[in-house]
View 1 (cartoon, rainbow, N blue to C red):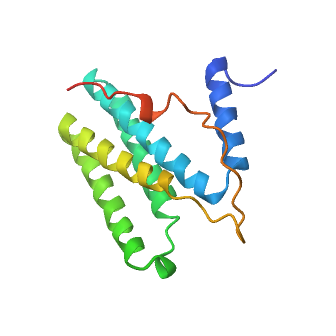
View 2: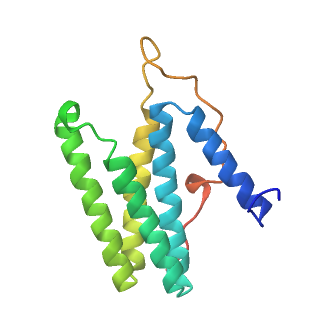
Length: 156
């Protein structure tokens, strides 16, 4: 009657994420995609450690979907020039490595990809959108303080 969520925390997280995406500017949306990919990679590592094959595969799929259908699809290859081409190649490499890590249960490869994606997110976060003449909104508070930056990956 009041919704399909049986887990109130999950309902809150989903609603919070949807609200954040609706209110976010394009710069914030890319940051959210990076964060989502990082979380999915961490979940894959966790499931790999526990030998939960189906869950690991689902997390890898989610990470690759975010990277390919979110981050890569958002690239403007015409205006992005060499940077856009390099990011496109990097995203393809990351997804290939995630698939190989899944196939071979390679904890080291998962950590390398996590580190690479974290570096990309941190670099993106260091870029401040131009306020004048753009639709940039003031920085919103970080509602995901317990996100990837404060999480230590599962040890191999």
